[in-house]
Length: 112
Length: 113
Image (cartoon, rainbow over all chains, first blue to last red; front, side, top):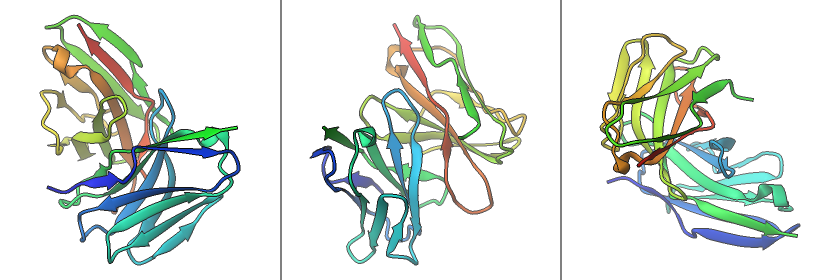
């Protein structure tokens, strides 16, 4: 079946470092991807999205890179702050095109 | 700030009880979703709706049922709760005819004893 996965379940960085969170997806027909941030006890919050006709998109302190050849998605966070500590999920449109399919999540821990 | 609300936020209930998790959004979104999430794990789609009187089952089989009588309201019901239903349930909505950002509620954490 289809799946969206993340390479590492946890990532620990120092404040001020750049963070890179990776995600591999399986559905080559997917044309829309989103990164979500979920803080403890809260629902996921939208960070940034990208469509398959792009390979890079930048937001405020975040950049998403899409490599369709190897079906890989990454989220880069510049100058990581303690407030960035959360679980990060990538999501893609499912094969049936019905809704977003989420990967397993990477827990980012930022130490001061 | 998304205007999507879930109640209750936390519920502890005994086996066999009927429960309804409420979800309301004030954004006028046609599409609404229920996801189930175990601690530290990914979200699994259990139900979705594209509009009033439209409901479909998601990828993860669930004994829960949903209804969509009004655009803004998408309640989830468990007729007879069991310990295996213990989880967090997240409601979301999205707008438009294509696919875009999902706005999530804060979640309802259900514990069945």
